[in-house]
Image (cartoon, rainbow, N blue to C red; front, top):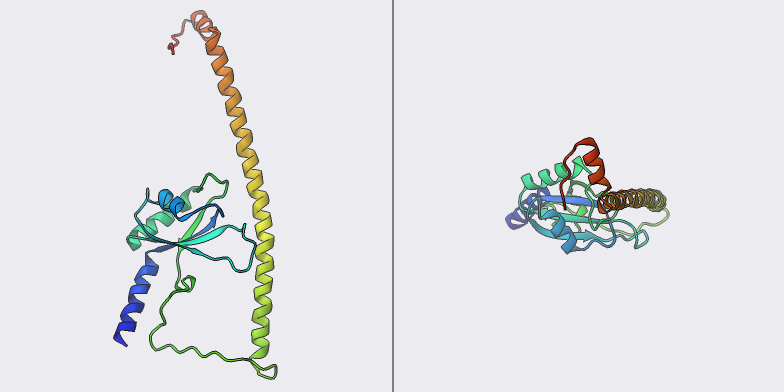
Length: 198
């Protein structure tokens, strides 16, 4: 009994050091997460949460364990302050404290018993189970709808980024052209300014 209590206490400590990351690109791998987050704190482990109810191109979720609870809090605070992106995708990553229910390998709570049974249609709990099943389907449909909205937002953001890059590139080419044909030097002499040579 003592060993199960110790195991559960160690698990609770692990949960306190773990951060739940949501809205990760499907292309993000464990090495990408480690590279991106090692600048903030030492990453002890990364575990992706499988998506069982939606299409494979849905944003991923991951549980990332850090060296301490303090570092986990710092990472959440840091990422909450500005849009943090991984793999250069126009998809800001979200971070929050992990909770025990997110872990599929969590140990059994000491002195807790779980009883499983088949429900007959005449059973009073049958309607509750049926309602939970319908609720799960409803949540899956909502997730799918929100995912489509999110993809539209990401496409819009990607287009804005592309347009901004194009404008900056045109400005750079224009400045480069002005410097190349010595126009800047002529204007500097005209207005009695100093222009540094390349």
